[in-house]
Length: 102
Image (cartoon, rainbow, N blue to C red):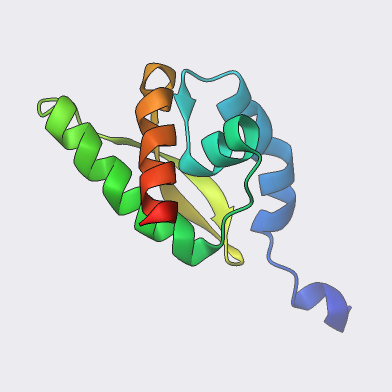
């Protein structure tokens, strides 16, 4: 019983809902693009740095469109994570490359 008390109740919920929501969605996260398109596993710090670059580029290209968020399991908790339209994936790949190289 004590062992179960320390388990985050959102963990099971994440396993049930995280994948299908984004797989069938028209939205994609930085982590998905890095993993699926580029074969990269990013650290949380890298995701944050890249996220700032991607958000800035998105706002420059689409100033009147708000960036949507989805709930994802991050560092032991469910948190809002920015998600972008799938037609923005090429720009995301470019931001990932530029941030990782520079």
